[in-house]
Image (cartoon, rainbow, N blue to C red):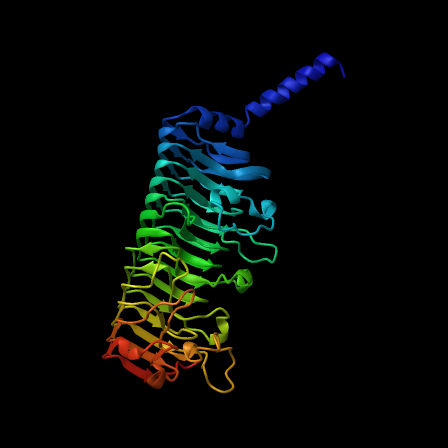
Length: 455
């Protein structure tokens, strides 16, 4: 081929590449710092991370039937990202992470790592953003997290749908990923009216390193969850967070993605780190293959008017647990000054409440159809001896313990006006483990009865 013709062909190819939909969008994102950026309609294949212009502010990115799809050879932290921006908005478009092609086995992040650093191939990533709004987005087939927000403030996410996202480790278990994550001391955040379906790891949560500031002033409200492999919601290392009016079903499914090797018991509403001045209220979950509420590190807060209902046989919940469990893994947290009131916990494989710490108020709850596993009867189908030193633990309606991660003084708790029913609850209603005197707590006006749900 003539050299002149060859050079012309190369130039033409280069020009064609520059005029591709991806190239045009990349150039606009890199140069437009403010105003409204209208995305073109149709599918745009993305080969590498699309980044907003440095210093972007007062910028709105709006779709019009737009699908941003990670290409088969995609490389980057996320399909779309922004750093150091102010007052940016995204609405009305779709991101497809191409998980079928891009997913590969990946271990979950080690405790000392920020997740924005550890996990690549996310849907959207925001770091050090002041003023972020995301509305009416659809994120699907994302390899790791649909949305990661780190070290940011004034975050508003609403009307978002996340489906079929999250990767697995080498054993095929979830590695925490899949949903919306807010981390690293972020403040003033809300996630409302959003839907999460078929998420392998945690669906909606906060996470922060123990060495970084706690997250502050958050709301998770009126979100919907269906088929979540780990936690529907987790509040981690935070203060002043409200979790309210969320609904969910099939938490801890499918069984094969549950991270059993790392003790990743699924939870409807989970807690980790040091969490105080927070309230979990008015949430409703059905079919939880794990715990309804895990209060590990939760203190000086409230769990009120929630409902958790399991209807199936005990063998249908291989990771079934207590309804509500306290713990104190974080050394700065003690399970004290918690109000648990007005909740309905129905159909738990074991007990209703694992209680520890002091000055907690357990008032007017309904713990129904407890101990469906039939602990501790001869010939029971299930292992009911979690701790040989505490043989009564799994058979009790409410069990008072000296602690799990660390010893606690369990005294000055008020347990009043609760309805406790289930397998042999007439005589196993409220029991205490070694070193916990029931007389050191106020136990009054509780109704205890045997009641077996027909199956």
